[in-house]
Every structure is written in C-alpha cells, then in structure tokens.
Length: 268
Image 1 (cartoon, rainbow, N blue to C red):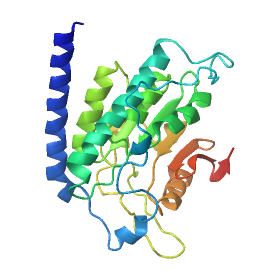
Image 2: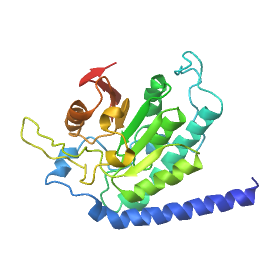
Image 3: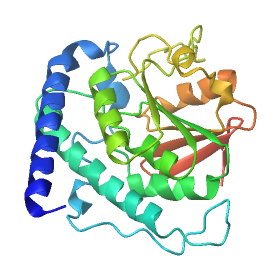
Image 4: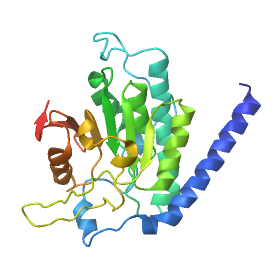
C-alpha cells in the first residue's frame, strides 16, 4: 500500500470515528439510567481520564515473546498473531484517547479502557480449542477481538449501540470472528439482592438481555471478563454464581490487575 492510499485510509477511519463519537455524545444523556448516589458508588475506583494515558507510547507495543500459551504450552507467542495483538492494543488506545477527548471530557460516560496488556497476559494461559468467551460491557471491542485472535469463540455484549458499531468496525479491520451484540449482560429474571439491602447497579444500565440474541446462555461460557466500577464486583460475582457455568472462570479487571474467580472464590 503506497503512502497516498495509507493517508486516504487513515482519513476515512478518522471520519468514521468522529461520526461515531458524535453519536455517542448525543446518546450519552439517555443511554444510562443511573441510580441516586452513583457518584459516591463508583468514586475512587476508575479515574475520570484514561488510567494509562501517561504510559501510552506512539511506538508499536512489544508482546513478551517468552510468555507460554496453550494449546501448545511452552511455545512462544510470536509471528502474525503477536503482531496483530500489538497493533490491536495500540489501535484500542488511540480510539479511547479520541473518545476520551470528544465524549468523556464533555459529559459522563462509563466507558474506561482497561489495561489491555494485563488482560492479554491473563488470557494467554487460558487458550484452548473450543473455549467460549464473553465480555460484559465490551465497549469498543478490543478485549473481545483479542480473545478471538487467541482462538476463543468470542462474544461481546454492549448496551451502547454506538460503541457496538465501533467494535464491529474494529473487528472487520482485524479480520476477527468476534461477535458483538447490543443489549444487557444481565440474564432475564436476575435480581441483585445484597444482604445490606442496597440493590443499586452502579453504572450498569437497563436493557434487553443479549443472551437470546447470541444463542448461548451465560452457563455456556468458559471465560467471562468484565471491568467493573467500584462496588459492582459483588453483583457480578453473584450473577456468575446464579447463572454462570459451574467451574467457569470470571476475570475482573481492577486497580491491582486482573483477578480470577471460580465458583465464587478467587484463584491464583
């Protein structure tokens, strides 16, 4: 591809993203129905701006070539897949930085980019043929696409349809088989009833359950990933206990990295 074609491609990509971010800015007032006290509910867990933007490098990311991965344990992650993942992570940060400037700096929106490198390291040892993955709140789709490139049958659920469109465009650019569905990751019939009586769902909005559209119930998934705001973790653990697969793995991103839970208990 010569330079003029590359410039044209980049310009078209920027135009499409600008349109999507404009849609997000217009929708952000109506997409969420936040309970009273949500500012206190989520305060102190996610920052108002990109949590890793000071670390963001314009240079291509290097994926550790010595990290073993299944199903060929002990073999390094290298070659085209490693290059794709490095490019995906950089592209994901570029999209979020634009989103942060165009949408989040003007009004509240719950999407914050996760630490993509940490999530990649958590997913690498979990690779196995036929494993099914779902992301709760997939936003721009980076992590769900990452899982698909690693060989998972990967699905992303996102309540905001404009973010879902960005995710589908990104998946197409990376020739990913990831499937993105607009809707809620809450199964029909689930109710959060904590012992303290505070049933607020934080930044988790209401919408039709996505599982009938996907064609798989929550207990069909081997690995579930989410990046909760502070205070939302107990609800996600309860949801996994009530509807998730026995022995299934729940990965929760937090300030201390990615924590793994199986059957309600944290595992190493």
